[in-house]
Image (cartoon, rainbow, N blue to C red; front, side, top):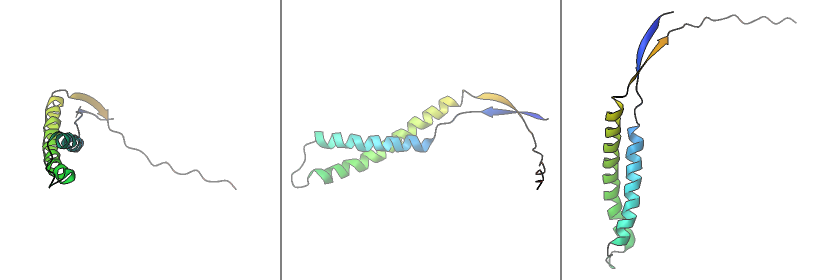
Length: 98
């Protein structure tokens, strides 16, 4: 059977890091909205929506940066494995005896 060497590397999923950063950004915007003085003519929810837009985008970008940094660190830790290629043979079905 032929043997072949392959490189194995575990890579982080960028989309998960970016979405986690976006959620953290929106949660942080709740605290920023609560800490900032709110204009009574505007109200809490429009102010939160304004901060949430920026929190989402900034969190998305920071999550992507964290994902890329972790991806760059995992590129150095690669492993090499040896695999064996096999082919399956089709076996005939046994006949029923009635």
